[in-house]
Length: 146
Image 1 (cartoon, helix red, strand yellow):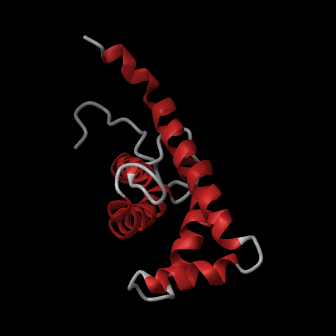
Image 2: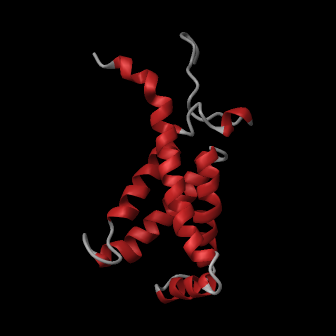
């Protein structure tokens, strides 16, 4: 009945990539660029009971990974890394922070859902993944193909 909406799927996937990428770049930027921010973030990760080196992984996953999501390059790999990052953020920071207030979980949970969707669907046809021959989950199968 509403199958005509299927023609807009590439724009939905593009919107997911752009929104998640912009959020990740913004949060990653705050953790990397200002002088001393990366050191402070790595220390915070250590105080959460995680290995401190994961702070570097998380910060660069968010910053560089967010840029890659925006252009649609290595989308499924980056989205999987962001998914793991958001699971940890949700579990270690969001859940203890509750539904409202500082450190709350709605944003990490929403980013987790966007990342999961990109892992499962790919970048869509409006992405550099397609130019690189990596596919973005946006191609259509020809009838009869297996």
